[in-house]
Amino acid sequence: MYKIQPTSRFNRLRKKLPQEIRKQLKDTLRRLQENPSHPSLRTKKYKSIPGVLESSINMQYRILWEYNQKDKTIILLLAVGDHDIL
Image 1 (cartoon, one colour):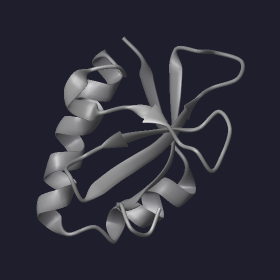
Image 2 (cartoon, one colour):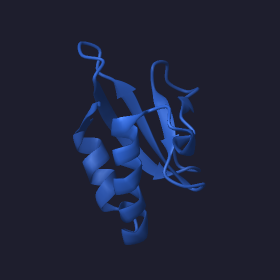
Image 3 (spheres, rainbow, N blue to C red):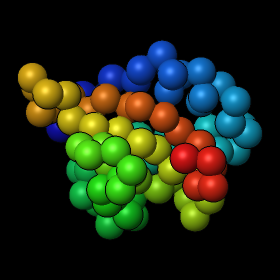
Image 4 (cartoon, one colour):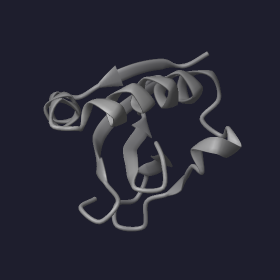
């Protein structure tokens, strides 16, 4: 199981999400912690930034994250938001 470590930017963006999306985010983070390659997450490389991955909360919202450079069992949550914004 992976450890989840949100950045301050991620936490700021999370607070701006609609409440229903925050509920879905909780389930998404649980799945990410258990298995970052879970099919429902649709995890893939984020093309704009090398080393960063994106996972879906739903068809509209996603999470940007990366593995910690020193400890690959830690997932750093970088950002969360609407697919059109990120």
